[in-house]
Image (cartoon, rainbow, N blue to C red; front, side, top):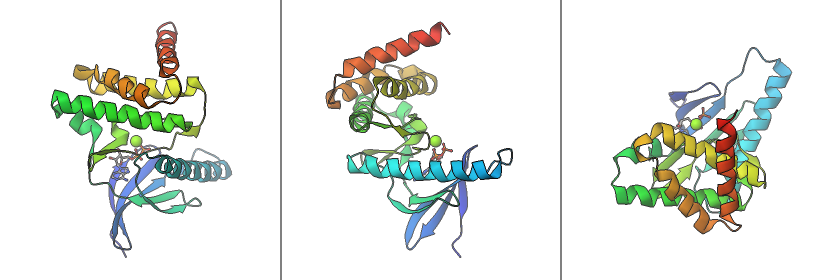
Length: 208
Ligand SMILES: Nc1ncnc2c1ncn2[C@@H]1O[C@H](COP(=O)(O)OP(=O)(O)O)[C@@H](O)[C@H]1O
Ligand SMILES: [Mg+2]
């Protein structure tokens, strides 16, 4: 029996490090909620596991780095995927040189544009959900993602990152400008429409 070690315990999922054949993998297991009716809970877990793995597979197809998926068990809500040995962007961004930070932020924006060009909404773009490895930004945690082509959805997706950067990397909040620069360079449609939408979302939040 392979030894499993819990490396992360969230409200929605438990992440274990394990082995699959000879590979180091993580198993992301969705947690059952006792307060939900069992039938509904099972369906939710089934649906979210399926969606998350589907979006990851699509993202890869369009050139965005994501962990390799080894197995999807929708019944038990487990995705078995490549263990990324790299570091979370959250843990390294503040310590990079200015030049390197700008480069990484542009790369992040370019990857998000590749997702959005194909109407993939990540749903939780934070610097905890990006792992830097082999000079690539790997995106994880598509659990709140969806397919959606609307400007609004893309704006909201980026707005989440804007807020994450403001709170986690407040000293370097200009990072988001570089993310947008990379984004605009790669976006097939007019990136300014999405950027206008972000401003609108910010305003909406203020007057709520
Ligand atoms: N493929 C992976 N390789 C390495 N670490 C991972 C991997 N997937 C998740 N993790 C670690 O587990 C944490 C939580 O995983 P995540 O998918 O974001 O779950 P949640 O939906 O609970 O936020 C991540 O922030 C990361 O540190
Ligand atoms: Mg996460």
